[in-house]
Length: 536
Image (cartoon, one colour):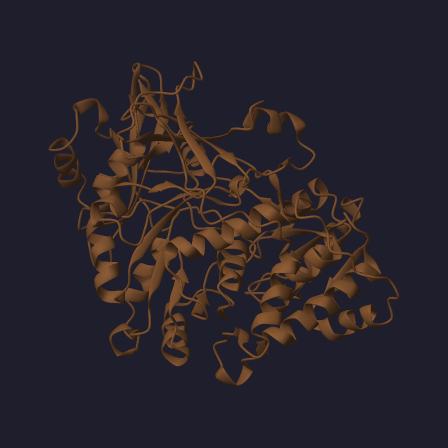
């Protein structure tokens, strides 16, 4: 039956499971103990280590005991490192110990690290001495006096010493309740400083499993994990999705397209989740044509607009169905997703339908009423996946989760009569020019489809006459030159005059969140500070 109002619920199948993260790993280890669970996908094959599921659960339980030797249940332990096998083991170890894992972007600098450690009241920090020139141990030592709850800094390069602390701990590990909090994930920060989303076992375990189901990942597949573990795209949609399918996880320390292609070739990679820029970098790498990708069965992406020609290219050149996820950290993280069998048009223009056991509605932001289908409003979601709240931020939590349990995402979206959803932009990104609402995503999709443009961000900039004017920040495609007049004329063919950008800026590199999303508020602030010169 065709919908008339913008409300839809996902299917009731599969059933939700009352399972903890540690319980999931133990279950799979009992089922396939000798299957390879984890491979460290280092650039040098000689450095690659492997764990079977039986070995992984042993190490996770050792880590849990070591964690309990240092920290009590409910305390927070932060991890500041790239995609190391030890990071993944700590994810399971913290879950088994009842200690809340706090994830930290390895690119953070002192001010950002101090904020996360202080706001989360972390009692401990697991850290590498250095990564990609970032002196992480020195920075952690520098900020420790300003973090009143931070008792211990533990070096990840002394991993065996840490594990040995658990060998002499005489306590008993008690599996937490599936509704207990297990992780604080800091939001991407596309609109300002991040908030700590308090996530829990049941939400993460089920969300990871349902995402892998809709991707079409087969049992025992080889999954190449390229997304950062500090982000839900890595530790949930990589690790937990993968374990739910009993996969072999090839963990990439830091994304490099040539390395990822080699790992797919060497290990018969079958599945991957990555942001569009990762996939494009792989397709454009000189090794692409010579690598064997014949085993690929599922590719998934999210985080930004993906035009139809690019979706077609992904499916044709990677030889597998392509799916799009949508959600946010606060939703564990996926609330809507396309299906592998959807049309190219639906994959390029929608974010699919609600996930199992998830309700989605589109409301008028001013009245709170559900809008008719085809009408733009705020995307709201409800179900098992909604976070407990922002850690120690009751006011921000109340602003985000209403009394009926609906999480207000701040995203502008529309729903069609089939229940398929399309994203129009962020509520805070919407440009109001002379009383007219302009949705940046409409312009960005057109710009992205132009041959000379690799990336684009459309932003509202303050203006005395109009309130805001439309500005386009564009990065040229490889070996292409941006012609402002050509782009202006191109947009005028498709858009009303008031939507066409007044200001144009060429970008070499966009400011990005840790998950690869463009930080538009940074562009806006930089322009206000006089850091941008308009294109001639």
